[in-house]
Length: 265
Image 1 (spheres, one colour):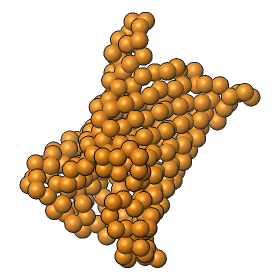
Image 2 (spheres, one colour; image 1 turned 135 degrees about the vertical axis):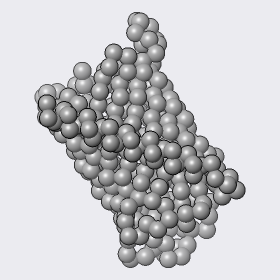
Image 3 (tube, rainbow, N blue to C red; image 1 turned 30 degrees about the horizontal axis):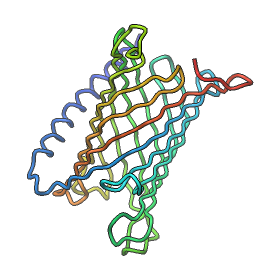
Image 4 (tube, rainbow, N blue to C red; image 1 turned 30 degrees about the vertical axis):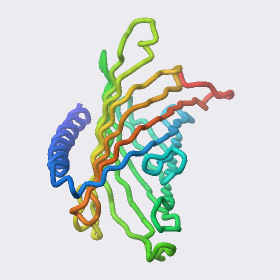
């Protein structure tokens, strides 16, 4: 009972911080639009979870991000691996590593910039009769190579911590035996906060709002397609980016606890 009470208290504090930061990010977005760079992108993601023990899962994820208005050229590639442990039916702990490659775009830059990103997270999930709510708090340690010029990377890394708080809701469109039973509405918002000595102007990093549809192929596979609005404050502090993103994601759960692997049921 004490653990449940403590978790509920943590939820309330996180939610309060979330709404405060959301209000702050919306205030930033309402500032002088002349300082906002508007960009359109396409994101394609594969996310896999592989059950190896009753409470233990391996995680793998890869995301390709396009150049502005182009699906043929990739500007970023993100690869994530991790390990997740279920404390109980509602709480999961996870940790892992993500490698980010930022490829030269349409600028004069000719070198790929890497970022090395260890991370840790705690996730809370609740299932209700007509909806599923998931909250996730992640801490990232970001080591980023800095450009000396258009073709040379510095030997040292820029470093900062980043907190990410995500809340996601899934709402089935129908309970009847029809195609609509396989469809769900997905709504989510994620706040990013920078912390570290090298952070000067952009403690608020970005805010992401996603609206989309989930199609359940079977018990272990689903596809999500939707619109992601990303608003970001750049390191200078007085410049912002607003990305309009079409995001396609494929999610897969596999169970390797049996001798012959099977789709998770």
